[in-house]
Length: 191
Image (tube, rainbow, N blue to C red; front, side, top):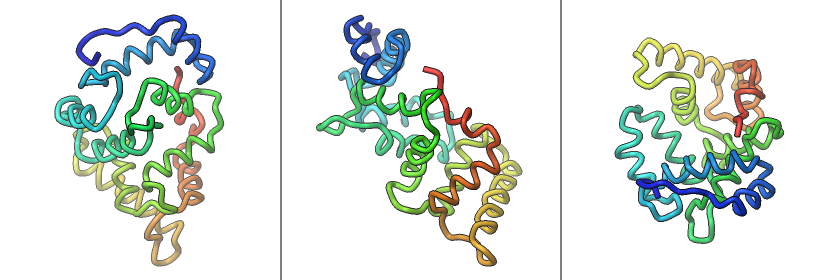
């Protein structure tokens, strides 16, 4: 599957389209992408695929990007009873971010992903996420330092004189609304 091509039968495209409120053509297009990610070719995404992607597909990316991708795979996508990401599970997660879907569930998903399900995101993890999402791969040290100052300022602004040690969900949303003017649009994908 990862090495070959796979076509989604029309009847499956229709069923998945209705289940996830995604057009049948989008289902078919995403099915092809899913199978490109399925490096092991077993019809699902699992730890073996992540290892193969990390070893080959993510080589050009720095550790901060890999630090964001790994939890997305492990905790972000819905999984079947065997802990694998089936195509249906893959669509379920992507549909959450489809344009027109409410913002708060998207933000809660991202926050839960960053925090590993905890109630707060530690400062170091927030810096990893900011680096992965705000800087291009291979950004120079000056860009990283500038971003670190912005993250530090956000923590200081939210935590009083000593600064916060971790972000709560409400702090996370407040900072995003200030620093990402087109937040709604940036959290939407066109399927």
